[in-house]
Amino acid sequence: MNPADREQAVTDEVVASFAGTTDTRLREVMQSLVRHLHAFARDVRLSEQEWEAAIGFLTRAGHITDERRQEFILLSDVLGLSMLTVAINEPKVDGATEATVFGPFFVDDSPEIPLGGDIARGAAGTPCFVSGQVRGTDGTAIPGARVDVWEADEDGFYDVQYTDDRSAGRGWLRTGEEGEYRFWSVLPAPYPIPHDGPVGDLLTAAGRGPMRPAHLHFKVTAAGYRTLITHIFLAGDPYLESDAVFGVKEGLVVESGKHHGGTAPDGSRPEGEWASLTFDLVLVTEPA
Ligand code: BEZ
Ligand code: FE
Picture 1 (cartoon, rainbow, N blue to C red):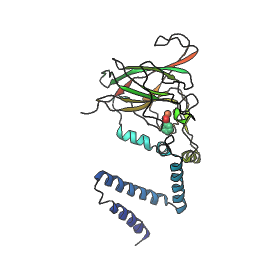
Picture 2: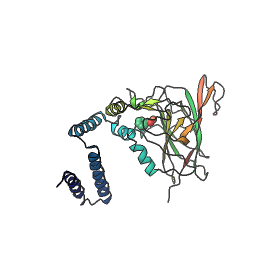
Picture 3: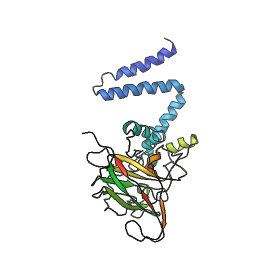
């Protein structure tokens, strides 16, 4: 047998080893994974030292991962696998808000806040009034939709990265009768994804930066509609063209209003600098 045939025989044998998998989807996924992984190793002529380095990398990713730090999601994000999965599963629908990367900083049990309440709850930054409407692509307002929001503070940290157990910069609310939502938060700032672990080392070796443009995360859930996971980004941000995790989409970039004193849209009279953002969240109907 020549060397190429011997290599192919290894692949064929491993693919065949999954032939008896009774879960047909698992069989399809594993056989395809083996074919592509082996093709990749042949393509780059993977050396034994490189194989060992890859195992070391994954081992370090495992060791740094805990309930607060998810290095494997970061790896998926910087490889663009997260955004590719979004592209496969959430194709663009005319008139609907586009989806983007989920990221590792969502938490399930964030506090409920009233319509017009404050999600910052102590997160540092310029106060920012965020408002808009949740509706379907046909223009129907969606009252009672659940809007989850989370964001980093002005120093670029999510509450789960704080050293105490404080919850800040996150919360959820229900839309009002006309699908409207509004809340106070802080103006988001650009921040680096966690880069003190193996994923950061990979970015450094590749000459890539860890920065994400400023953004506010949304997860919007309503009966009869596809759940939307997205962000809004700020126009003029220097990192819009070089997001470390490839999450920026043109339709998600908004201009922020800058204000000093005066009267806010909710009738309050903020002192000093504050900002405003308006963004409608348009959901896709879930087929019955
Ligand atoms: C985020 O936006 O929260 C995020 C996304 C991907 C990796 C790290 C952070
Ligand atoms: Fe984020």
